[in-house]
Image (cartoon, rainbow, N blue to C red; front, side, top):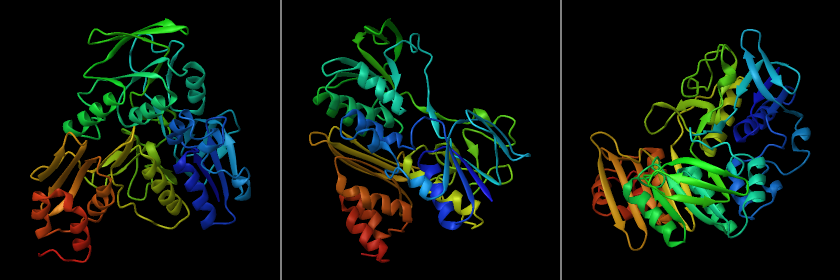
Length: 416
C-alpha cells in the first residue's frame, strides 16, 4: 500500500505520522513544495521577532525524524493528478503512483490588484524565504507599511513591532480583524495598537505602490502618501487547488469532501486549509484555514486512508490572538444566529470585552478581549453544546460567570 501526501504542513505531517502508527509496513511519500524541512507558517512571526531561529519553525526538530519513521520526503510541487490512473505528476521529481492520496497543499497569499504590488521591497509573509527577505530589507527604525489587519496580518503586526520598525497598518475593513471580531472588539484592538505606537488606518485601501528597493511610496485611498522601506502584504489566502483541474476531484471554495474527508475521486482525501469541510458551529461546509483544524484533519484523514472509518464531526471555528500583549479570541458563531440572543460586558478604558451568543439555552458563539480567564470555558461550552437551563438567564445578566455556568452544565445542574 502506497500512501502519497501532497503538502508538508501540519496536516500532511500529522497524516504521515498517523499512517505509520497504523501500519508499520506501508509505503508513505510526503511531498513538500519548498526547499526546507516541513515547517509551521504560524511560527514565522516568531522568527521575525527574534524569538526563534529558522530551526525553531520546523514541525519536527529531530533531523532524522522522517527517515526513522520510513517516511520518504520529496521536495517538489504537484503539477496534476490523474485520479483514474492514480498518478501524480510532480515538478522537480519523478511522477508518483498511489493507492491512496491526501491533498494537503494548503493556501497561498492573495495578491490584490494594486499597481506596484510586484516591486522590490514588497513582500508577503508566508514562507521562510519571505521572512529572509523581510529581515534583509527592513531594519530597526525603518518605516514599514502592512497591508491588512486580519488574523494573519495581526500576527505579523506584532512581529514587525518587535523588530523595532515604524509601522503603519492599512486595513480596508472598518475595524481590525473584521472576520473575527465585531465593531466593539475590532476597534478596541485598533485603539490598543495606536497606544503602542502603531498607526492603524481602517476603512482605507492601498491604491498604488511606487519607487524602488531604495525606498517606496504608498498611496492610500484616504489621500495619505506613506514612505516605506518595506511593504508587507497580508490580504488573505486562497486554497492551492489549481493543479486539480481535470483531475476528477471536485472543488468549490476548496476541495469538496464528505464526513470522512474523502473527495469525489476514489481513494483521494483532503485535509487542512485546502479542504471544504464541516464547520461544527453551523453544520455547513467551509474552508477553515487555521492550524488546529489542519492537525485535526490530518489525523482523521489518515485514519480513513488506513481503512479505519472515522467520521469528522466538524471543527470549531476559533481564533486566538496576542496583539502586543492584548489577548483576543472568538469562537463558533461569534456574530450570532438568527433568533438568538446576545449578552455583552464592555470596559473600554480597561480594554476588556466579553460577548456571548446564544441559541435557545446553548452557547453557540463568543468573543473576548483582555479577558483570558474566559477563553477555555467559552470554547468548552460552545464545543460541547451543553444545555444551560437557568444558567443562560444568569449569563445574560452577568456574562463573566462563564466558569460557574460551565461547571454546573458539565454536571447536569441546569436549574438554580
